[in-house]
Length: 367
Image 1 (tube, helix red, strand yellow):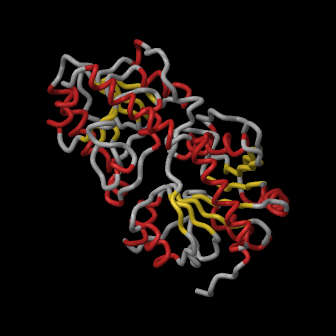
Image 2 (cartoon, one colour; image 1 turned 135 degrees about the vertical axis):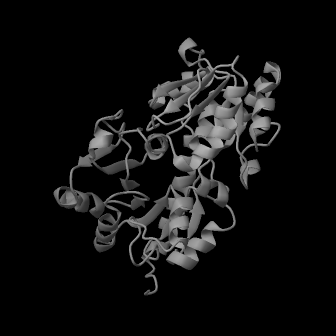
């Protein structure tokens, strides 16, 4: 198959959760014999922190505005089998119109931000990457989030015809156990872009334990942290880590923390890719709680759950051997169920089913 993707970014992992996921997914789709063309608007903030300049085995098409690339995109779509539009793609509506006008490729929408999308819709807000016809023109809607609510919400609110989860994953070629590095050494680490709606939990599960355990070393890696962040002397900071540095970061952590954005936690069944990355690197996992977490890692056996600062302090007090056994179980499960290779095979299987069924040829009902 030839798959054309219109996305937010694959070229820069700075300040977003899309790029790393797309890199792993595209690499393994290409390895399985398919071709990828990825269209990305060349924005200054991603260009300034670009850490991928070519798409191995595929084509990366950067452009400054839609009018400049429209003819090229149209040409690519004429012999494409599948066309995917993603959440937060700045040209999502124009790309959707072009895909439908060409009429050859199976139209697919992939929402990598499902809880945010639904939260805005329920609040009556406009979602920039979904047009007035909702999702009814797409033969398949993929969701980064699963659980019981997603399909019914997308069908009821947006007219989606077929909704399937395509969860986060980890590229095991990049995220794997490596020797620890002294400059990343931490008793508790946290890797994530600053987000205001994670701040309360981050202060409860990370900052407060750091203040209570001045004898331990705490480390944050990420981007966009404000000067007003409540640092303490034993909290160290590394500004934005490219994916190549994730493995030594996690491998140097005695324990690493996952904090989920509010909309994701409320929706449930929305595992961060960071969970799988950390597990693949052999780091013991500590996470806030949310519905469905047990479908991905078994609490108490493969992951520790912290509902307050005391839980985080208790986790920090656990014996190293116990944490390592838990980490190994989480790593084994990740390698079995949550790799980019596995997700790529899931994606290809879904697309082949759509192609063979001819479902994309069916005309959706008028709004």
